[in-house]
Amino acid sequence: MPKGYWVGANRTTSDPGKLAAYNKPAAPAVEAAGGRILVRGGRAVAHDAGIAERTILVESDNFEQAVAAYESAACQEALVALADGVERDFRIVEGIG
Image (cartoon, rainbow, N blue to C red; front, side, top):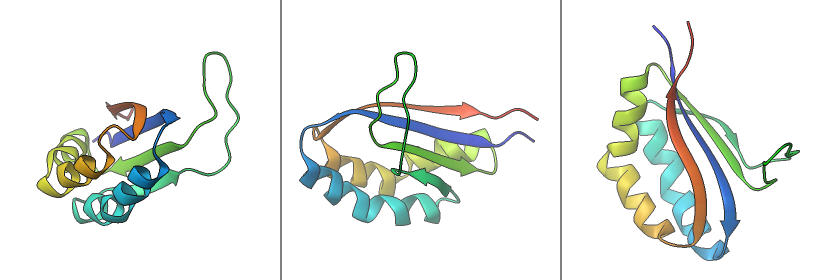
């Protein structure tokens, strides 16, 4: 069964304090829902229309689990802390194979 992935890239961070407030509950919420954080920040090189901002990649056992993790109460509460502090490009995708 194909795995599910969260793929997110921040376009801009207008309030680093809100990002920090989000990060604190977000990782435990993701992990409690079965997600595995593979990338969270770190070095990046942007190509084409990419922006070298903070990137996240979370792996779940399947697509449905990835969607359920995002929709969980704990993840939604973490997003409240983020509010408008970051403009991000975020999606949940199904892997291949």
